[in-house]
Every structure is written in C-alpha cells, then in structure tokens.
Length: 226
Image (cartoon, rainbow, N blue to C red; front, side, top):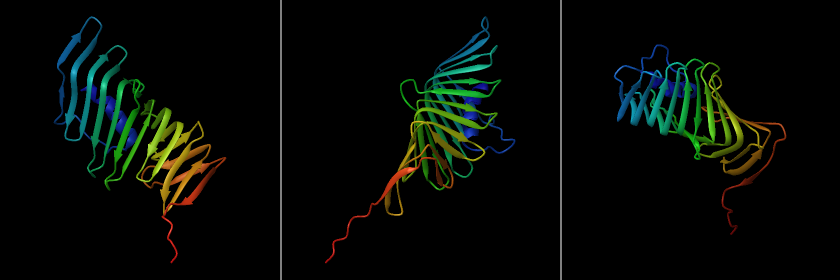
C-alpha cells in the first residue's frame, strides 16, 4: 500500500487530517501490469494505475517504486482526490510526480502543462490554482509553487512568479514577479500590485505588503438621470 503515500502528503498539506485515520481500510489497488524486479529491488505498475477507497482516489498511467532509495516515480495524467466528512474535497492534477518516503517530500511537474489543484469547501465555494511545478514538504507543512502561479476564487484572481502554502496558517503567500490581485468586491472592480500578497484560504481575507499600488472603480452600470 505504499502507493498511498504521495497523495496522502498532498492532501495533508491542503487540509489537516484527523489523528488515527486508517486509509487502507476497504482500499483497492489496480494496474494493467505489475512487475516485481527483484534484481533491482523495485516494483513497476504499468497502465491504468489506481488506488481507491471511499475517501480517496489516486490515478496514473505508470508508477515505479524503487525500494533501496524509498522513492516513488509516478507518471501520466496523475490525479488525486481526497473527500472529507464535511463534504469538502481536494483534487490535484499533474503529469509527473516523485515522492521520497524518507524525507516526506513530493515533487510535481506538469511536463509542459500546469500543475493544477482544486479545493471545494463544505459550503460549495471553489478555490483553484496552478503553477509550472510544485514541491510539498510534509515535515515542515509547506508547499512551494514555482513559475506562473495563479490562484482564483469566485471573485478574485491572483498572479505571481512563485507562492508558498502554509498548512498551519491555511494561507498562500504570493511573491516574485510583482504579484497582482484582480477582482470584484462590493460593487467595485479593483486591481492591486504589491511586493507580497497573502491570501487566507478559509476566510478569503487578503493582505498586501510593500509597494502597494492599484486602482478601484465602480463596476455597477451608470444610471441615467431623468
């Protein structure tokens, strides 16, 4: 059941898990081919690789586990889904993922396409994001997004060169390439640049730091006077 570990790390960074949860209960692992390479001490899963249980789904085209270095190499339309008791869920999409068990680190690459994530809250609100690559560290509780980062809510779009997600704060910190936030709030359109933008996932609060510039304008249609 080691194939469970990579998506577990991604989901633990997205939302805290309850202590003592047993994710192997009722789980089914499948692939078209499974090979034990005893000479190199590794396992190969090839074609329609999947891990499923009522809470959890992982899908990919190929997975290689190299036992001496305790590393997973997963390729081809990698998709993870984690469902929670409050009806919220997290989805992550990429094309290539490497997971190192000893250091509990995951490296994600879209291979020409963005690494994408989607969080759907219990209230139905959706938060989506993408970047060229991402790195997740379970021990520190951080996830790093590198290259063309974007984060969107129902009324706000944010862009930066890089970003950091903190599990403890449940916040995204956008930095590099003059972060920008564009959106609509209380009847006004706005666009704001800053050296750093901090966005809190649950409250939707947004903070701007250093060299803050921008504009605000009325987004409501003008009313003609009689």
